[in-house]
Length: 327
Image (cartoon, rainbow, N blue to C red; front, side, top):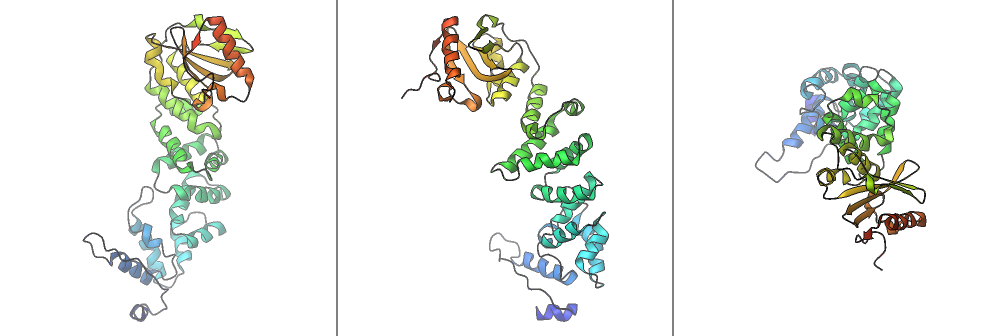
């Protein structure tokens, strides 16, 4: 450190790195790289070396990008001022604070500024995007989201998963689904709430991949009983919609229903599917609530009574173990 200070002419902040004893590369490579960075910009956040000497998916080649910053810092310009002048289009206090707290924010700022000209939304977006750096398909999705809706809607979508255990996966899955959608204009023509984006986009992808085909006519199983409409899906897309509504995989039963190997019936109350029933011959083999829960677990006895009456009216028997607990 003393030799480095003699070379640079100014004090150097302490830097360290765990020695890499694995592999055959020079174990001091990362440490050396950090020391070199310190000669360029001694007041830069330490993790600038972790992310900014390699390519990434959004900004130009990072060394060339940062070279303009280091030219200024070697002249005595503070790191934050050099970054703000060279890499930030619309400076703000929030951006200055973020840059000095974490070097990765420079890329997040670059992305946010490409999405909107509103400084307040840029500040919010850079913080929301920071955990997802490297997901280029997410940036395309959010950019289109803002263009077709608003920055506020895009932030509402990200905020939904901010503290969720599987939030990162849900955000990434939604963005991947959007990338797979062929008719994006038709998708944006729908009024999808930010909270419904994950499920709705997955549904659209399924429909685009699976051609809508007619299913076997099972209207003989339809009836209105005990306040419930027992109806049958008529097409494969209606089957997919049912699976999406109840968060199960019944959409994959398309071939079995079309060929008559089973029938699917939905118990609907006030226009909302409540139960999904699989029937083979005169037997109910499955009767599931939302998220594949058995009907006997329902807290409302009305649902169970309706299923009992439906079985009596249609002459069906239960072999599912979903209607009555085995205990």
